[in-house]
Image (cartoon, rainbow, N blue to C red):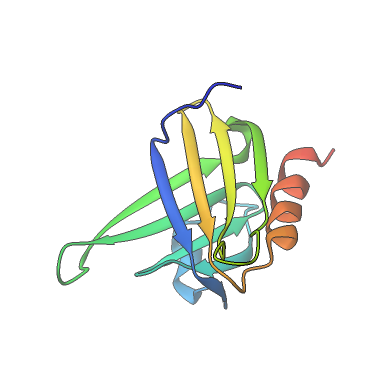
Length: 124
């Protein structure tokens, strides 16, 4: 498969509690399933989409919210960390919008992350 340039890249540091204020941006019938810390914010898996809050600027008061509906994901791949000097696992998503790369730092369970995506995309 030819290499494509990622349009978005995120690094998830660790699993964390689901933020209480996420309910403000959920639609009827949507519920948060899991959350992961990024360097400055959080990525939230819901039963309908992946939401990433991205604080910007020095103060972090300006926030951009990315919303990726699972229905727009065509394919994904996961790669576990290799061990010696290779500490990060990676997830790649091919979507209608383009290619997204997610790096998972040591301690984030790549297989649990893989199952979150599989359950969201492959359920009946």
